Length: 95
Image 1: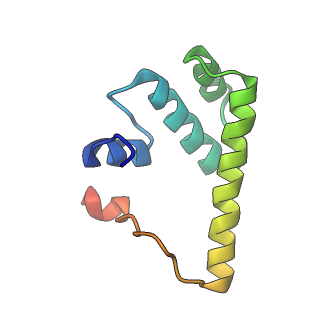
Image 2: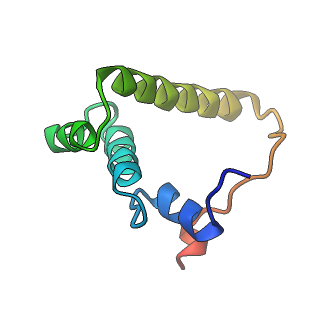
C-alpha cells in the first residue's frame, strides 16, 4: 500500500537503500541519529542536505524519530496491544 516492494521495505528498515539515492541518505541519517542517540555524524547531516533535504525537513525527520521513540517507550511500559501487523525482526529476515 506504500508503493514499495517487500524487498525495498527491508532495505529501508536496514538503513541501506540501493534503489533511491535520496531515500538512502534519509535512511542512513535516521539510522545514524538513532544509534548515536540524537547525535548523528556531520557526514550524515551533510549527506542528507546534499541529497536535497533542507533544514525544515531535518526538523520534521527529528520529530518523527522522537515520535517513534515515545511510542516505543509507551508500549514498553503499558504493553497495550499493537493494532497493526508487526514487522518481522530484521535479524530473522537476514539470518
